[in-house]
Each structure stands twice: as C-alpha cells, then as structure tokens.
Length: 506
Image (cartoon, rainbow, N blue to C red; front, side, top):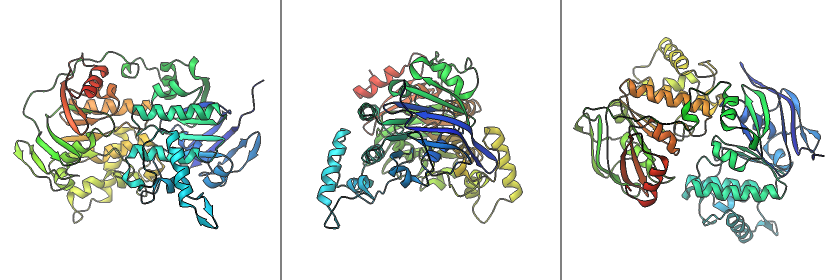
C-alpha cells in the first residue's frame, strides 16, 4: 500500500483580475521522491508554488499536509510547517556574509547574543556538503550568481524541511554545479525529503525526477512516472500540440546556416575591458545571427555589454557602419541602432510596477527624449501592435508586467526593443527559464528577424539552441574568445565543447 502524500492539493483555484491562473488543480507529493512540475509559462506552475507557500491565498480548493487540511498564511508559516522554497530569482542580501544569509532569522545565540563563531562553523559545514568552495565570512555580493544560487539552496535545506521546492534552481549553474546539486537532492530524497523540482531543462527532469506533473493553461494535464513518459510526448502535453514541425525540440538535423555577404554593420577589433574580457575580434553583418557559446563565467555577457556601451571598453576599437565609434553609454548605442535584452530581465530589463504598455514604449520614449513624449494614443497603438505580433498573454496592455509569466515577460522585453527598429539586436539568454513552447516561439522570431535583414547577437548556455540559429559561433573560455566557427551543418555541440575544453579550435 502506497504511503500518504506529505503534501497534497485538491481542486485549487486561483484568479487574478482577468486571468484564471489555476482552475481546479490536483497535485500530490510523496516523501522520498523528486517530483517535476512542468508546463508552459503561464501554465500555473509559479502560482501553484506561491499557493503552497502562502504567498497567494487560493480562491477555492484545499491544501493538505500529512493528510490534514491547512491554511498557510505566508512563507514563514510554510517554513515552520516544513516547506522550504528556493525561487528562480535569488532573493538574498548581498551586503551580508554568506553565513548570515544562510542563517538569517535563525541565528545561533549564546547568552542572548548572536554566536558568530558557531554560525560560521555551521555554515561552513553546510557549504561543504554541497562541495562548494566559498568563504562563508565573505560578503555574498562578492560571489558569482552561480554561488549565490547555491547559497540560497544551502539556506533552504538547512531548515530540516519535509518539503523542498526548487523553482529553476539550475538556471545559473554550470554542469559540475548541477551535478553537485543533484547529489545533494538525492541524499535528501533518500532521507525522506519530498522535493518539488521545476526546470525547463528536459535532460535534468529525466535525470533526477521520479514523477512528473504537467499543467497547461492553469489546469492539470496529468501525472506520470517520468521513466514511462516519452520526451516528445511530454513536450506535446505541455504545449497541447503535435510537435512534428518543431524538429529543433526533438534533436532533429540542423540545416547549414550560410552567412550573408556584404559589409559588417558592427566590427570589434581587439575590444577589451580589464578583468572582464580579453581582447576579441567580432563582426556582424545585416541578416546574420552570431552565437556566443561558453560555460558560465566565460565572458559571453561581458563581451556583449561592451557592444552596447553598458560597460566602457579600455582597449581596442569598435566600428559601426565602417566608422570608428566610442560608445559613452547605452543611449549612444540605441541612437546607433543597437538594442540589448539583458539576461537579468527583472533587475536590468522590466519595471514590474509599470504596465505592459509602459514597459513596451520605454526604450522608444527614451530615444525620443522626455521633451518629446509619446501621446497616449501612440502608446496604445504600439502596445497593441506588439502584443498581437508576439502573442503576449494576457493581451491586456494595462496589466502590471509583474503578473505575467516569465516567457511573456521576455516577449514584452523583446517588444520594447523591436519597437525601436534596431539594426543589431543583442539577446543575452533570451530563453533562460522559459518553457519549450515560448522558447520555440522566440527562436522562430529570431530567425525571422534575421531573414528580414536584422543583425542578431545570440547568447545562450544551450549549445543546441546556439547552433540551431547561428550562422557563425564565437566560443569563449576564461574571458577569452578562443575560436570563431562557421556553422556549416557539421558543427556539433560536442565539437564546441571540445573547443571550450581545449581552449582552441580542434
């Protein structure tokens, strides 16, 4: 006889203005399992997690812990009930030390005072369990994004949780760090902890998860044993469509990508920034997609930021339309037809308190200057045009952008830059943390923009995605561009990985 679920929801319903986010969803989580929660952006995954942790109060249905109905009033109550959560966007205090972040709100005390030595000692023990080499007394802000993500996971598992919810915990981790995390997850699973795992990396789902629940459009599509669910069938159930035309999602053969001829729109010659990226060469022609590949911390983002003026170069030259150009900042880049979608869409892209309309017109308004404001009529027209063109959901231009799913937020950010009609669009991890359906839409959009003559610089940690879209690929390692490869149809992820490993074109 199967054991009782440690966590269960029955008939959960949650509505927001104009949107039914969850519509009668059932879900079960058993002790000692890793359970995947899958679905498109907007399917209801994040909303379900926020109901489970008390961030949102359900409008109907019930939540049960160990078979008993409960009403969780907030994240603190959830933690006290044994539910710990690590969200996709790391929410830590960079000004505090690693140890302080791990024990914030639960500091060990002696004689009524914080026992700093005990805190650092216990934090060091927890960090070692993840095989993470970090000074627990160092400010968290001095650590990389990947280390900060791991610290958030350490903090969550330090509470002796019965339920551990991991919402896209691997989005900022490299392969070795993912394996360390999985080793910890397996130990926790073997100790009886129930783990709810959300990821858009299908390989990770099949590597670590025992069961899978699929949501679609706020409803339960089904619950499956992961080993018995074919990958193509999983994707089909997530997006509600047959995938015969999406060969890129099934590992289909890539076609040769022939680079367009003609003069370069942008050319970097020995461009560098000390401590960020070594001198590199790069040229991009109209209608060409250049991919940047490399492991986490390889210098991909740093190289792109120099092209947008987000960081100032301290060596080399940049030519735009053949003329040597010194970018003093992003405004100069925008004026010269360059747009940049940051990988940190919530901190460096969208403004959550503004509406979809206000976010879409932001870059265009900035390029015009605040002395030439766009009329409300013009704003509405631009917003509606791009909402329809990119199928942004919900299609309400006055909805706060923070209420949209990750994939739809990414579309809003793309709309903001496409409205400026750029000549070069720089996309830094545009599909990170979004589902396969939205990922396919964005990939098709990028290919279409290039066919229409736009130059695109495409950065992604997923090599298949880079090779699928790019005419040429720049490979970075240790903040140095080690190779520039033609995507001739024979270029494979294994070839690129060999280039990264060797530091040179094999």
